[in-house]
Length: 335
Image (cartoon, rainbow, N blue to C red; front, side, top):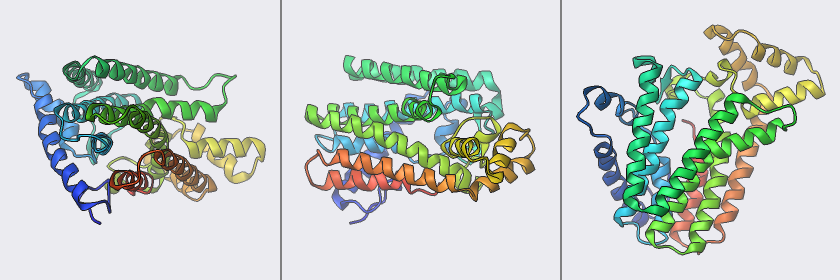
């Protein structure tokens, strides 16, 4: 058992070879999908694509499609569709979060400004929509629903919970819309377009929803634990922008309920000026020492375990085993 796929270690050699072969085709199709004669967009639209990435969503499309016929043209189109949609959302997210780096390189808005970054994201969404139309009406419908959820998730994160909302339920709903919706689409489209059963496509959609939340909770941990060199992002950048994360929500709740000095200090620093790198690093260091980090890690693992439980509805075999390893790779990653 081995694999050359960075996000799917230790899977069946034959399945790994098939997925790797399809991924190579997908890389070429991604570049074809953003090809344009426009001198400006030619560079901006490929900026994050050329910076790399794990291609988590295309891999999930292919693993789901392995339940049927992975080599179908529509499966390849679906993999490109979900990755283009993901890349488009990154351009927008970096503007919303004022992120200066992404995937170890300067973010698009840092290089060309907010307007160019937003319009480049829109361009990628347009190309993704054209692909969905080529696949068929069901793909158009599912993609439109996902696009709506992506927008609502970002909107709800920006506005924050109301006084009547539970902040933890609100946060999980944001993760579900901003991250899990696209993984659910990847799983469902891969199964549907491969000719797998309706039951299998439903399982893969529910699995994608669950693993998407686990993936983002793990990212909350990674955002604090990693360095710029390993993650390609500035540690704690969400803290600077006041974006809630599970560790900060846990610390705030503890500060309100117990009022211990450590928790109160973190909450005070969260509310303060974090424009200087030194102040941000101090806050990140405090959170790294806090139990909220391990609580978040445990919650990510529990959510991943719930996702694996959903996979038990699939037939035993190489595909289910690969999906279990895929799950572990998403919640136990270090970059």
